[in-house]
Length: 349
Image 1 (cartoon, rainbow, N blue to C red):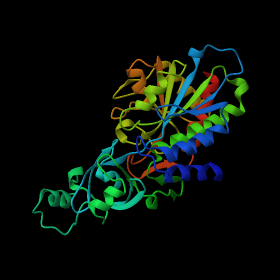
Image 2: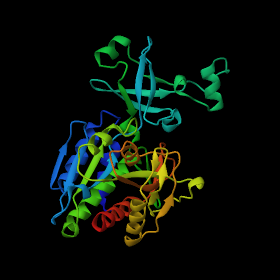
Image 3: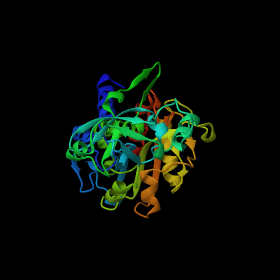
């Protein structure tokens, strides 16, 4: 990636983006897509939608929808306690281990600093919470957000049940390894950058484009896929491609490298054979060895819309990722490889 692309990735990673409140990420994606698409807008569900139209006559049903999601795993306030601490639950597929004891931002009427706390390790195990902490088996009921503010002060600052709590920007910067990038929320900020770079690549070669392509940055993927289903039910096109992070695990036979993962199926259904083969062939044309995998404990916007009958065909292209839903790691070339594969698929479809 160029330094400009790395800078864009950092801005995406630092931006807050809990489900239903992805405004910061949305504005970055909208501005980036406007440089490459014929039209860009935000629909009523909060999805960013950019289109690159074919210069050749084409059937609208031949259009392809490419989706990556705006939202991140996060937390939501369940209760404000009398001591000013916050009880929280998962927003999306988060577990306490996803964050650890860490600084957080509470998104009230302004951003309020807090600390995600599991309590002290120096305890006798006399409570269930203490025993969970000592054994490392921490669950959401064991967790509190320490704000050091009164209930009255928190109320004035708009903190209540339903307020989003996210990892603080203090801990969001990417960390460089010799041949890799590590950060929280590469899911799904790395795929977002991939579809932005793919839009750039398609725009540069749009005379080869045989059908319209819709680049959709979706809302609420981690909780319900609601944004994707709203967009897919209204946009033209019979094929939906989700761009995701893909787990690097021995059980799936996947490796941490640039070679993209082509997902053949997940917990919401099996992807269209035609699309799977098309993505694999596109990866080879782009110079990569596709990793074909069946990601059983997984789901995507594409499998969601296909399982609801909103898309005739679907596929999922993923960037190999270590420690998904944690401090994630991707190969330095993983984003570019995914983008190059997408360009080859979209121009060759």
